[in-house]
Length: 283
Image (tube, rainbow, N blue to C red; front, side, top):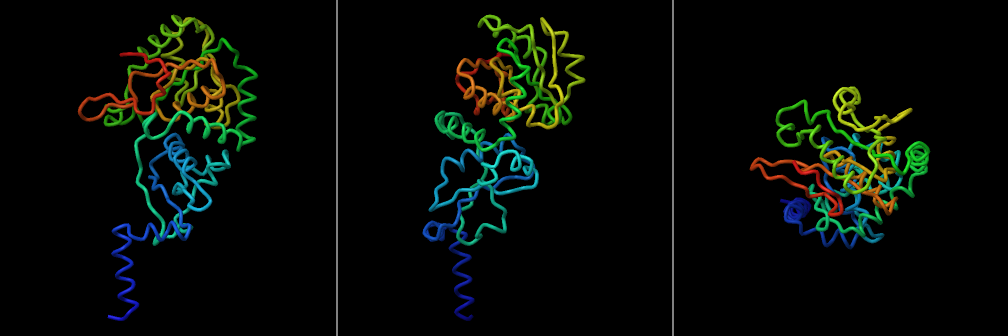
């Protein structure tokens, strides 16, 4: 065995044991959050917030890039800066971190969340323009209702985990808002299945139901959620981020969340990402 072979062998052993991480810190190699190509923007925002709160010039912190989030990189320059392609990261000296759950108050603090939300919006003239457009037709007495359908109700395993009694959740949320003195006569529905909402949600509402006009992308939806003074959330991370942004942009914001984010195999109901200030529409 040559000296080169010995060195390569020792390097592989050290890498497996994480012994090269201190060397990587000295050399300025990044810490990289590993992400799944099956994950979408809402979850990625938690990863980007994690990177944003830990990133330093001496030790960059980045989120592994996948093509599924390219739209987010275009919309928000901040998260483009916080992302890295695999061929840009040193596999030898970088520290690789696995995906994690999003616990409000444990994985991140309120102050960290607020700083990230402000930086995210400030980095994007395009999103600020969407916010201005939304505010032009959403009034202080408008209630924004987010309804998530899609794959939650297409696959039995996802329905078992994420499924809600949507109609019951809406009626319960409306009662909470009424008891809190909020208007519910003008409701804007943001959904990935508007026809279903026209048929099933509109009859539940005490007043009129509107949808997002001239919608061009999911970022128009996010801007509408973020512009809402009063908000009924869906149990999706995309919706949670709409609630986070709204609470930063409006001091008198009020949100009602479903009784769970997901249900695990043991039947336990989880609300890990929920802001403690949100009201809960109990089942």
